[in-house]
Image (cartoon, rainbow, N blue to C red; front, side, top):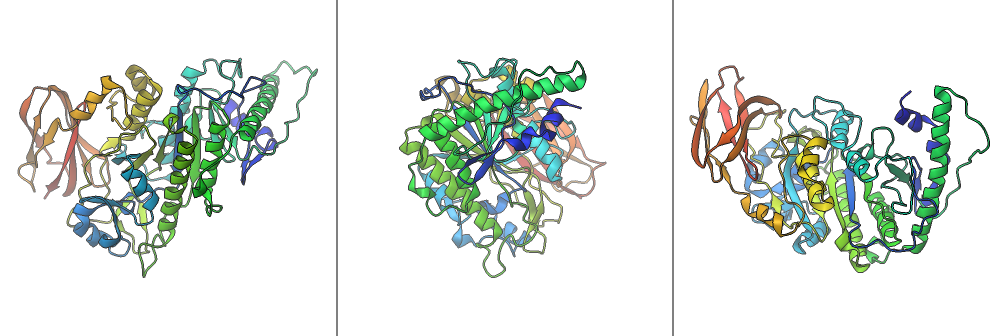
Length: 525
């Protein structure tokens, strides 16, 4: 039996429970013994908070492309948000009307948004796509480690052996809830701890003086006993931080039924109490909105509106809490969901599993802007049409690790993928600020002819010499052809594309260079 399966199936998973507010906490991994937790973490101890939106969030009703509104209204007349109700961020884009608190944070330069985040060959299974997003794997491969776990293993070498210790006395990661997040899975163990409420807890029963049998079972039993001892030490550390920490924002009032707000409240309290955990994972479910996404007589109401309001208000309360405690410079957060939803509504006041969707980043340290152009919505949308990927989610992950935790680019490529492209969603030092000025380096022109029969030409202009990758995606988001992936000189270029074996329909031609990307829609007759 694999050790991670042994741990998940063992009695320990349910033996230790702390009650931090209204969430139970189960300890799956180890750390902090009797080391000093009293001193507050210094400014170099940065924290990343992952907000998982379980079910597949509808990005088109979350971040609404106003310049595509007419075509979008044709595709989803029974679920689209009325244009006059959209919370405008700019003339061409706005937020769902239930996200007023997020708009306020955006106006205060504390929100960054990345449009069109996904991956090639998207999978529309909740389970498989969640595995892809939490592991950072290609769609066609199964990886047994999480993207955060690979990073944490480099920080906590040989974990769990020798932990906790005076230099690293606290859990590397914490999931608020009953199950550890796969994002934190390492080679042999998960580097996270599942926590629900550290106000009350019971020590796990431990055994001493008993020899373990010299067998595979004995080895696992030895490991299990080690885990029990370390878990107990973790519980003491978390209780200590919970006792020392507090919450000061009044925005939590009235959100007692908002699970996300309650979980973020716990995170803020533990950070304030001096816990030097690097990564926290919080969750909110319900985004699988095949039906009743909106109310028939008012599309600004319904299940999706309630969920987005909880996300917006929970994040706003958490951010204010950190600011009032002068901890906001140490913490950033980001949302992710296993996929977006289809462009076209499904006839049940809902939307079906889709591909790319926006990601939100919040905190004092984010670059307060919207990355990526609005998605192009065709005039005629078919049932299976999807939003194309603008940014590979692994590039977003890598950019966070690079700019927030100082990970070298070589490591990013090793842990995620070779085609990593930096996206400056986080403010960086002067050395990296030049990246912000390099976004419009590549301009892709509409292919000619368009529509086309068998062949067409893809033209683009490049401001700075370098590698350009050009791929064609079908309407389901699958790669049908890699048109180019090579070095190009400065200036205009034209590539002849043979599409004779493509089926008639819409294709998205996506081009990207080191610091820029562009996309057009091509029609095969």
